[in-house]
Length: 190
Ligand code: MG
Image (cartoon, rainbow, N blue to C red; front, side):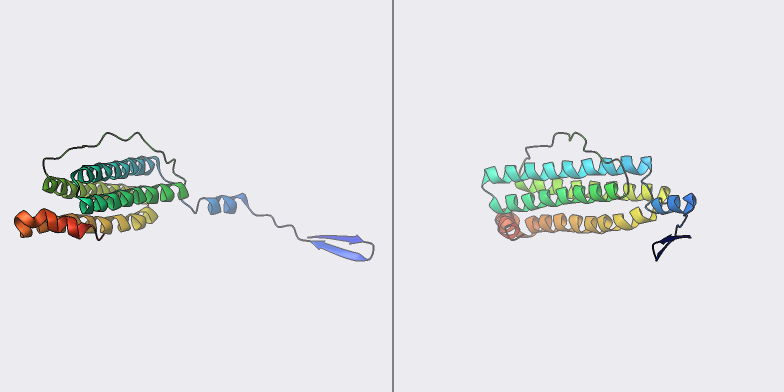
């Protein structure tokens, strides 16, 4: 405590010394991403962006066939994948990870028939579910509770993604030769 007297006024100053240990503790409370978790997140960001490109490619395929409903569904799907990538980037940056955008491999551009595209969607989403599970395993191995909590949203999202793709395939099977028309009409509503 400093007491300074200046022409009738008394100025009292409090000087507080904060031990360095406490300051350090505070900055470390937002735990930094480990190298392993950073790498795993960057891989998943790449996978989500690849998925976005895959669905954009499928949208082109359907658009060129005049199947506007299917193309619309694919464009929405592509947007969602980019949102997934951005969610991962935001979280990684917040946690102090060195996030980066990697080169994205080429995606397929042709399929045997419309139904084969949705079979591909289903297979791909099952694969993404596996990737998310593996990412969760890394968060568990690194004992990072906040990341485990964050990834739970993705785990649940994948249940929905698989279900959506399966539901479209079911329509192809149920409606037989008219399946494609019904699916295209339905998917326009997304
Ligand atoms: Mg995704």
